[in-house]
Amino acid sequence: MNVVLLILMMMAIGALIGGLTNSLAIKMLFRPYKAKYIGKYRLPFTPGLIPKRQQELARQLGRMVVQHLLTAEGIRKKLEESEFQRQMTLWVQDEVKQLLKQEKKINELLDSFEVNADEGKLRRKISYWVENQYEEMMTQYRAVPVEELLPENWKKKADKGVDKLAANIQLKLSTYIDSPEGKRKISELIEHYLTGQGFLGNMISSFITPQGLTDKAHPAVLQYVRAPETKEWLVELIGKEKDYWVRQPVGTIEEKVGKNAIKRTLGTTVAKTLPLENWLNRTVADWVKPIRSKIIQDAVPVLVAQAGTLLADRIEPMMKKLHLAEIVQDQVEAFSIGRLEAMVLDISRRELKMITYLGALLGGLIGIIQGVIVLILG
Image 1 (cartoon, rainbow, N blue to C red):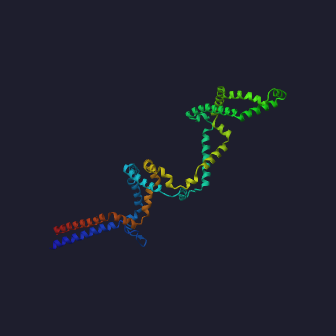
Image 2 (image 1 turned 60 degrees about the vertical axis):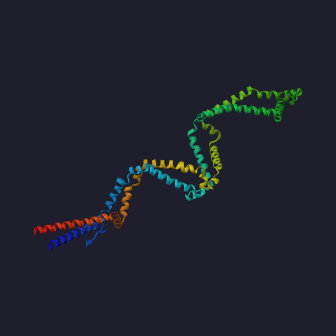
Image 3 (image 1 turned 90 degrees about the vertical axis):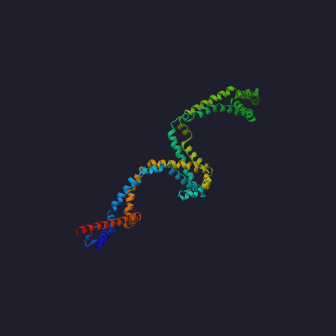
């Protein structure tokens, strides 16, 4: 009986020592939180291992997160996953639906983003923008002939337009001359001409009155105006004028009209033509109502896919600029030791208990072995 009692006592003592040793070792990972001193001398094993190496632990965790956990390749694969893109598309569509249902007016929405929506200032900015766009465009095209800027179909239309313009001028001129006003104008011209000829004019007037001359000249003038040769002459004249101007550099035409006049006219006209007041007082829902379904069903999936591709292509330089390792390091260094201990224990409390129990088990087995050895040697 004494033999069994001896072995049991040694087993109990070994188990107690093993369990306490492992439990103390686990506690010493964190405790004490700060170094302990007796006078000027720091006690060994203070502070605990993790408090003592917190900065190194933070640095190693930062590297581990960037190099092995939150890697650019891993994020790129996630962004390119079809299921992830589908979920992102659904989420964005829901968000866009809510956004497009807003009853806020455009000017209220702009105010919420601290954007000045004053109509007068907007018109001035639009005018200024149009003038700048005109100047940028003309800087590029001032030395270019007009004909080089015209599409081929426009050139063909211009050629056809010459013939139509000549015919229209001939018709208008013929109609005017055949009218009472046209006859009166011809009579006035004949009378003015005869008056300016002195004696010869008086002599002609004595034989035939200006009205008589008008009656004889009017049909001849009308016949000449209506003649095919007149139309051909007009076509040739207008065609030459057209060819002359299309061969001129754009800057020449601008100079004739006046650059500043063109700029101001364009800017002012565009700014005044736009119905800004109506636009600013319309709600977001009203604005997008005609295209709401297209935005949600068609535009959003395309934008999500393009955004995913763009992020996937640029994820590595973005992560470098974010300095994730430094962020993790700073966060871990900022943790209190109590918080670190609570985090580790929450994750591995069961495993740490098992380590304590394993120490007790091993200590008990060693106690049994020691008891048997003592009995054998005794």
